[in-house]
View: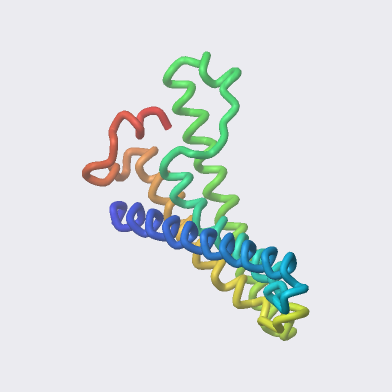
Length: 173
């Protein structure tokens, strides 16, 4: 189960990366179209709406893998000077607190999605239902919940890292 969560998180990050590449290409095309408006070209209609939604989706798809890899920013001024046991306590507490916050975030995202769907809210130019973006972000949020649960199980000794996971990397985070 833990290995499956790690693989799912990795693949969601890859999907998020592909999405960002596609958004980047769309922005280049849109800006080029604006620059060549005299030649009959123009911007991509609704480009800012697509960037807004796509970036949010990509972030939610990146966060689980970022967390599992220990890629979040940390403030090491005090932490690095603590004894190893105290570092583990701080890490366990912060990971558990982040799990609780991630669960609340996912719950509120679910409620927001239902509300956007109920009121038929859509984007201004493309008329894309906003709840679609919420639903895709919710997929990333659920994967994030699974990642936080998996890492907490590992942290509290109830599970272990998947086979092949760099042990030194795991000890550092």
